[in-house]
Length: 515
Image (cartoon, rainbow, N blue to C red; front, side, top):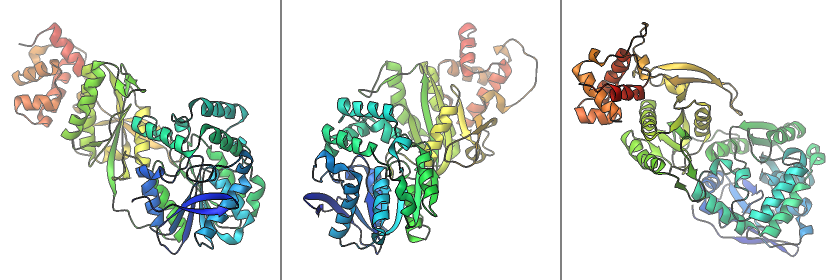
């Protein structure tokens, strides 16, 4: 969707930039948070998708708060919340809107609450995301706020707020560069400080009982900027408010699973479940994180040694081999597959590649519905795969039990790894780990010295290639056999030699060359 015409509403001597998208019978107003620039925001695919979804069922009005983006700059005393809330009235009037649903994000939630309490005849409903009534209680105490203002003074325009507002994107160097530009074009450092100081004074607690409009409160479980308890308090103190907790750390309404966020808002506003989005599919998500012996230079996005660079170059080949679609590799690998068996094969190939280069990775696999048009990959299932990877041990491939059940009969075996508690998810997530190849044929026996003479001629040939550092697919090509056959040979080799890993088998060959 291309950016639309920017117009200006007038509130006294101050002009407020706004845009109107869509032509639905319902009027919606997106009341923004700290960063805003109507021209720049359209450059982010997530923002564009979110706006497109909202404008599909209503006429959506977007605006830049006074002092930010394309709106007029104002004196510091003109940033008070009451004046900013009255700018909503000015935008409604200019857009020819009588009553609207206000979608308040971050500080925009407090603005929306104040406006709904003061002008109930203009508000059809409230949808509050990442909101709070009292800044000091829900966002930052005095000490944290001093650190925040120091970072604005020292680093504004260099993605100073990224780790607070969109921590899920800190690994994305290109996005960080765009975010730095958004900071610069949203406000100058002086204006950002004035706005932050005004936000620090926000306290609309006394207004909550006066809100009569139907209210939806949405909050991400691990919101890095505004704690979830602030959202819960809003829902408790606004009469008959509905509270929805979503997984995730990103504070911004147009980050993360924007399709899921839009679905919830649409159902609340229209009273009907959204029609399934054509770009949403059930996918298997793999997240891999280097955890030992690997370092990246975050400043330049370049890898610190030759081994890491070789691993980075190998990732696209692995994805192509197993039909995976991956984001550009930053400090983690995030990829989707159309089946769990392919994801597991890719995970094994990534682990073998990392092992051959002398470092370790931890991997997590989960299954769920995502928007395949999202670039980079996003959504709750991906965030859950990331949490699973974070719980994995060194070199372990950890899966949700749901993902493992989809590969029944494929020859893979798993061991139970308990459950993982994820904020925003009601029930603990059962986990399993991919069992080592030697467990494919579980046999109880006494320990004995490794004896290569017990191997068949074909097994000795496979073992020689294992010692050369080749993966199962590479050995299959070398010997003209299927990957499944090579996998069975490797399992039998480890079983007969009573060795725990391929690395141990390679070490044995180094000591006792295979004849």
